Image (cartoon, rainbow, N blue to C red; front, side, top):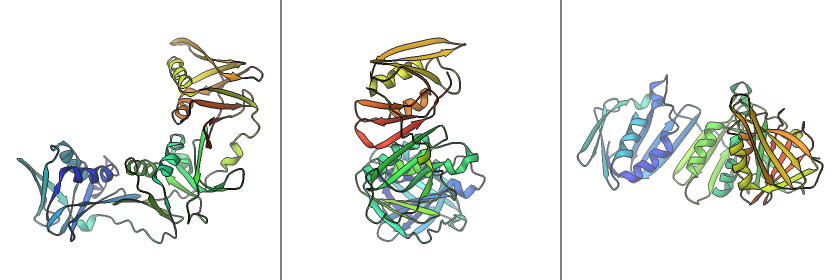
Length: 375
């Protein structure tokens, strides 16, 4: 194998694939990226952790076709540190278990390789459900929900985003993403894409969600999605990500969404989030508890800690119901506030012991639920 590629082009592809590689691996080949140089002057890079595989292609000048695997993070680190505009030459010496010579200007590197035969291949299988989704729609589904994904491995079925077909209140079909960790829940809808009418409900793993979000960070091309009940594939431009799905049943989240919370508070989103952040500096316990004391026209935020002291801040709020005190996790509140795009955020309360419903006043297609705390 022998080829030359522009540094920025190679780096762009390496960014997509190297983050799949775990920094600690008991299987040495999983620390490597597979490099395939083939006809048509194309370079293909592949990385996998056995549950998730990312493939990206880039233009290169291929003098001799071939394939090799080499340490992904080392290659990425080298290319990242090369100067802008540099040309990178790669040549395989001694077969696919030999070494890869990388030359750029006066810089020369020799990287160890492992045999191609050891590199695992993730078979796609049949993916009968396929549709195309605008990139901004997928960004929305991820950003509005992923912070609520559980990190508790014992409840593995909560370790991802539940993607499924749903209907809104007027019966319109929607593509919905939901995430919950048992203490909070976030839900977002977008228009149901053509071809997704018979979409099965699936759970996309947390790591896959993070990698897909990186793939769609820049650009505006649509995303092609294909899936079965066990696997899902996202294609964005020249990049492709294939992942196993979580084999489990997502809970009936509709049951925990409050429907009758009649005490409504509307408040400026930016000022509220900043105040919560300031007051929560005092809260040192694991729950990051703050108390909201709500009365007509205002809300008082309070945090107490036997170790650090007390914090209080008052804010103007649009509230006309009976006075109410409720405890909430400050970090959960700030996570939700970070996704509010309009100038105000609206809370729907029942009482101090019931879940709170939170909405963006300018976005009817997203909602958040936070369980109360005792304060």
